[in-house]
Image (cartoon, rainbow, N blue to C red; front, side, top):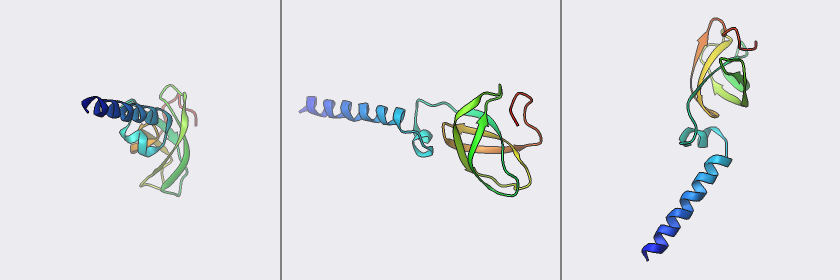
Length: 104
């Protein structure tokens, strides 16, 4: 009986690890223990507060390999720093200018 329970738990744990490593969206990335929180930079559209498919860059100017979708709060600004864990955007802050290595 105990062996069946342990095998069942091991199988469920295995499938959870596989699911977290394969499925990439804002819901799974939020709880994925294998991802770390990152800081990226982007230029967003003026005149809107909903930003979709935004290409973000690291401080070194390297592209983030996926695009981000998030809401903002200032439609007059266009430079943001994004605190995110994979595709899950935790918070954004508006900047006056982007770091010099980040592509415009």
